[in-house]
Image (cartoon, rainbow, N blue to C red):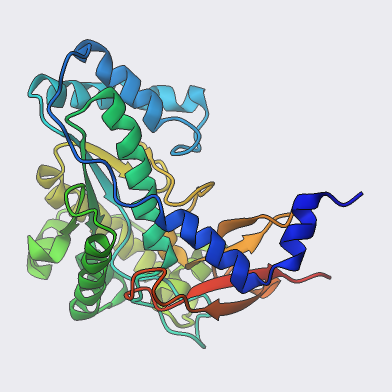
Length: 331
């Protein structure tokens, strides 16, 4: 028997389903205003905040894998609690653009869209939960390493600064200025600074898998031969190490990445997400129960989907030009 919920979904058009989903998403803004800490047990705050951070809504790691991050994160949180200041979280979201989903036929994208809206929503949800434990609240900083994009993939700084301007406009549009700001690499350092830091590193020869070669191509927005892919991958390893060194003094709080690294804990960029939004375009799709959920459309999976772009003026901020719906193709 087909359930009532399924029938209701089937009666709706994709446009209607997306509209309802986006209405719910937008209702979560803005985040809570920070307040002065009252009669709370400050000694328990770091552990309780860490539990929120590593819950399933924000973290894809198992409890066993999370353990390696516990002590360094607790130390940073405890220092902020002692000073009665907002808890600082710094979140890497890429170089200020999105990789091509069809390298060679579609360019890279500098659009701010559903991916960034989800990142802001996740940050707002996290802040709301933390504020119930620690009324002073949090400060969430989005980190954009756009000089890396320049030195590794020849992406002009002017274009990535345009992306950052649109991202800041999106933050203002949803009322999250008190909670979220943006740290842009090129606003603090020059390409020459990064090149000098890079000169102290050397990554050596690199052998690439086919998947790694394809990853290089999508961030270039065009096809490339094996030699170029190897060169750019080696350059990436050198540049990212140099960039991390330059940015470290500007990241005094908890440093998070979309995929966990040895040094950084993960934070989901969208519900269920365990991938990097800059690798493609976040789209909406449906599961076997015909319920909408977000997914990352990339050059690796785009051939498995038919997709269409919808516009929702007046519902989502004007800086978001469209929302993409992707439907898996049947064999």
